[in-house]
Amino acid sequence: MDPTSNAAGVNPATVTLKSDLDALRADVERLRSVLTDVAKDVGRAAKTGYGEVRTKVGEKVSEAASTVNEKAHAAADYARHAAESASEQAKAAKDKTADNIREHPFMAVGLAFGVGLLLGSLLRR
Image (tube, rainbow, N blue to C red; front, top):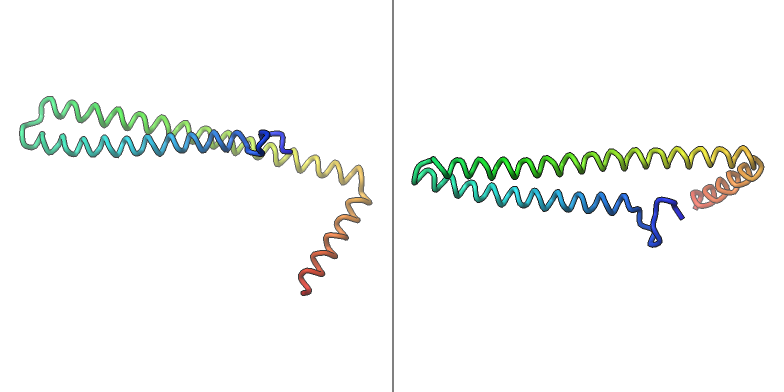
């Protein structure tokens, strides 16, 4: 079993990334809702004048944009860390495979020969 997987075989990094992306989607949906409210407020402002409505609209937009920006940065940071972790794991697996080939060269040659025969017979059909 992969050391980064839990008992169900699911990588916790994948689960966390998915939840971060779901949170980002929810924040974008909230931003969309806020922008709809802003559009309504702008319509009201056009009818009644700017003043307080303009201030309220600016605060809502600023707050929503800040939240989405924070979530996007958090998701990007997490994705970057997940990619680095995956790269490290791939390098470790490559090194382990190379070590196994050095320790058991005849087994490696035999395995390669067997795989070649199997692929050759499958491709010939």
